[in-house]
Amino acid sequence: MNVKKLFYKYLSFHSFLINKNNYNNTKLNNLFKGKNIMSHIKPNYFICIPLNDNKIIINELLNIQKFVVSKFDLLNECIIEKEKFHISLLILYVKNKTQIDLSKEAFNEAINEIKKINKKNLYFKSLDTFHNDVLYLSLNEESNDYIILLANIFRKCFEKRNIKIVYNSRKHVNNHKNEPNNKNEPNNKNEPNNKNEPNNKNEPNNKKEQNEQNKITPHLTLMKNSHLSRIYMNRKPKIFPDYYSNFDLTKLLTEHITPNKIQLLEMDIDPKTSYYKIISEFSFS
Image (cartoon, helix red, strand yellow):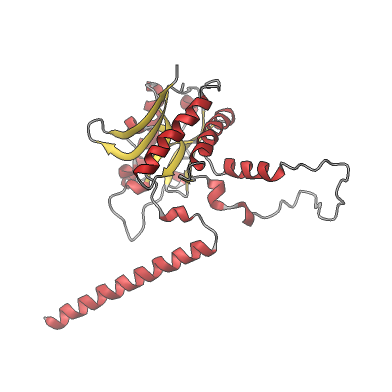
């Protein structure tokens, strides 16, 4: 019996060492590949536009969730409750109380800038995922540009105070450096530079601004597999395109969201409201 116990202890310890080694190797690989270090830090705050009481939109969002679950019922655990539907603007990692106070300050500064901008209605475009882990609705081009404009105002105010921003963009994660060149495009490597072309001194700043914009994917989250309480075969079940691509979005695409509020929220749930903990809030007039 003692031999058995020793054997099981050995197996457990061996498994622990393997898992730890795999984790360390993965972490090192991510560092060498230049992946976002923030993938190892769990975001805990975010800024969003909560959904208003448009019943048609909410019902259609619930129908999408039901449609996906009908394809794979295990994903029922992944659904976002209708009370929590929102358009994400910025995802944050706030370290301590000092940074919470700075976050409130940054939020208020950004709101003062946003008040100068005309509010726009938001229209949806299509369903997509982040790595088949998070199912979301993207926005049409005009709505997308408006949300990116708001997000960049917040980004500058939070970066100024050294508060970490966690990016979610497919473009940012997939990194365009590995994209093959388009064979149909002419090769301009041997073409001489146009001497008459003005030298844009602001080009580095413009490129930086463009890179920051490419890191943001405005979206409304519908499901995420991080909500799963169990892991199956050491993996989270994925949300594959087959589960949602055939859903008819016609009804949803004719509707729009009129932003009523912008909120700075903690990701923890307030037991009194069953909603995220509200840190700061702005209501459009």
